[in-house]
Length: 301
Image (spheres, helix red, strand yellow):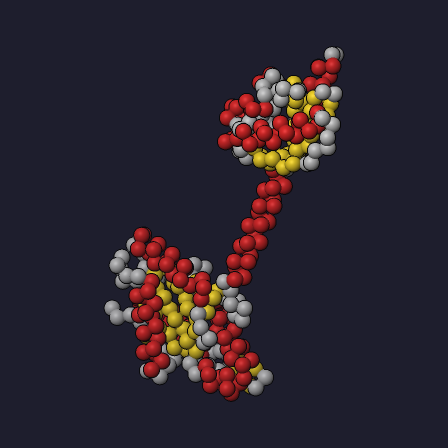
């Protein structure tokens, strides 16, 4: 077996991609684990013919330093289909990340490309999860665990847009704790916090998977109800009042029973807006509270 044949056989056994580059920046031999490495197709081609200017310049610089006997730094390289139409024809179908080392062999340079695509994908997934977690935490109310008011408007806009597009219904329900300031005075801030937590917990149990629960104020929560018309939103409000009437919150200052007032608004058609719905729900809530509380006010038919 000749030296060239031995080298070719050896290159076939390694997982890294290896390019042996001569002084004219031409590929003398190649092999390894990449789909696009094909000896007959790459041999004799220059780095400039195989890669775009940026990648070719980087690899050429590494090879020149190695041929001069200088130490080269380990480099990370991304190869995309846009980087090399030639490699696309040979099998480069998606972006690949490589960790590149370069060393000297007589008057030639050896480029060793270690595939780190999977590592980069894992890093990207971890970073995405971290960002999502931060966003998730940033949109949560620390006391009740439900979403905070920053999350309501985008979700309400999305729900209204989908309802208009697909000719569905949707409703907004506002829930306000009656006499909350008196609860805080009598049972302390801790008692008020326990009431809020109990209400949020009860609403979480009652809502459907597609419903969206938000704390929007000191004593107020909101629920975005997709595919829910006026009568159904009123029914939901009545069920909330019934469930709340059965709750008894245990505090250091004694058991707390409380009631809620509810105002609802439902999408009236394609010309309705989230702002108009929110205003109507708020007005209906005010009517419920001014009428003595512990009741539901819905949109006019």
